[in-house]
Length: 459
Image 1 (cartoon, one colour):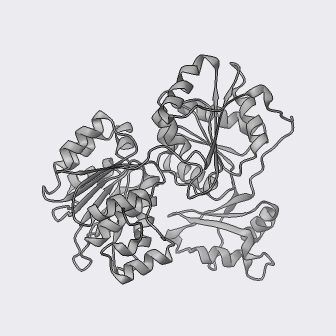
Image 2 (cartoon, helix red, strand yellow; image 1 turned 180 degrees about the horizontal axis):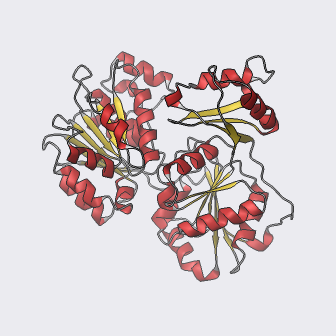
């Protein structure tokens, strides 16, 4: 029987104490199966659903083999999106707390290359990034990987979906032959097998249950008439009133059209798709993750790399033609032991898609008629928080404590009514409870942060 305690692994006492402080109590199935193999320096190809704990699995693995005294790049993690790369970097930083002076650098497209070149003048221990930007740095000679010990391909299937196959193959030609490679993918296509054959040497094949715990996710399919999608979506929002929900569409144009339609009806809905600039993406994701927008409408590619904790519901405005994608979508709710909902709309002409999902899951689906849903004309789903945008960020040496202090020092505003604070290079966002939003906006507009005036606006 596989042990699920981290203390069964050959890790230092300091490392184990840090894992305990991060509330890593026992290993998830992917961690329990992969970590003993990773720590022996063996290549793996692992198939695991989203939210399975794979980041900690490879993060612990690459930190275990790291020589922190040697300032050379020893580990490279390739991710499909900037959001996932940022998320992975944050998690590795948390895991690396017991290892002094560990330098982790994130290199992604959609951001200026100048600051990245400056950061690369002193080689980082670990680089996390998207294939396009990593390849650019390798070709420029600004990123040197002659001493690479470990390569991680995270969410390899989505990197291929996003057209990174050629970039990944070019990167592979510029890496040392002798290294450990870890490949993680939710799905396992022919192209993934090609990548696996090119990168991995005698890998151990690891598969954990790809279907979701049906007891944690309430899954219901609603049969609708041709022009009733938006009306049914609003009825579902009224019936279940989720504090946060991701609504999936198959095309980016439909995402924007649906978001605009819901806005006109008084809902705080945001669209996430490939046509957004990076600053717009940051703003959308910030508002959704800090609970100042309840509804995020996204395509599968745009939503990749999202890690929203406590996501109450996934709503399939349109069914995916691929049952494996459907399973991946609904796996974003009901995480970490929480209950979740997966609600799907379909027309009678799409019955074959529903049958394919049922067959893939191995269990019958629960179908209800949309006519059973009641709705009231004036229903609104008001988010619990409001986001205030500050026209200053990391480059202005602003820290979260400075913003919290400006809002609460001698103002009468209690700190427990202030939510998440997100810092970017030139902007900062602070979530405040809906009832105090006007007061908080007035305090920041009339006051100062770190002795300076900044332009403030409500999103």
